[in-house]
Length: 102
Image (spheres, rainbow, N blue to C red):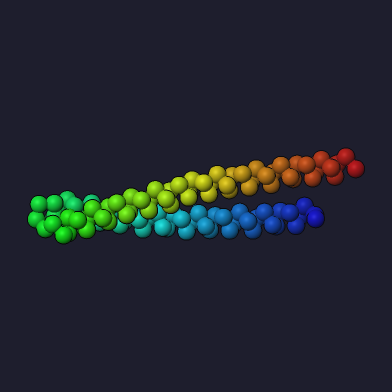
């Protein structure tokens, strides 16, 4: 395996993981909006309509849980991406040291 093939493979993997992090961000934003709609329903209908108040609570809880799950996924994904980049840099330095010593 040449250093160019190694670089190409790592670039493809980094681009793929960045795309997946973007997808997680989109899902996080969706659940944030669901949670915000729940807050609005809770605020406006807490004393007027019981069923809209309950729907607001359910939406708020679901939105909060979704935000927690996808936020954690983003955090772990960024950690994984940083580990991947560090691994690439480590392999390149080892590969260049071997080439220089020959």
